[in-house]
Length: 162
Image (cartoon, rainbow, N blue to C red):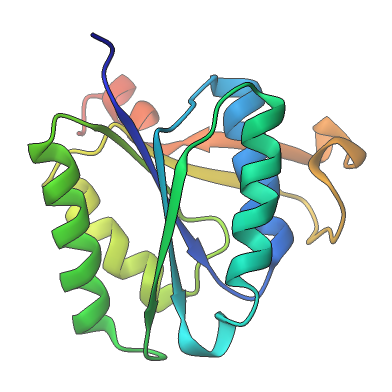
């Protein structure tokens, strides 16, 4: 039996940041999640379904169909964000899932709220797509020299600071 994988992403101002990082994770890391969960602050939640559709299309192109869900948090509600993200991560880990989180598109409140349980509960991956410029176009249309997918948990393990 293969290990189940979960992918959590944080929606902020850029829908492309969500889609492009997910594309990079699929293409570069071959991390194909069974479930995807999108966290968004209320001000940025209008396009949740469009983003979920984009993630479904990409997943299908890579040959799988994850279950996708979302949670909307009031703007700048750090306490609720920490609680809800932490509860989800804890539940996924109890189910034996490998858990990855993408912090690229998230606003600072959600990123901070996600990193606390990520470190505490020893997530397998914390992805960040470092780009030289904010690009509003698909991942494959941006020169690879202008973007680099990083996995902060992997990097921390390499230097012995996990």
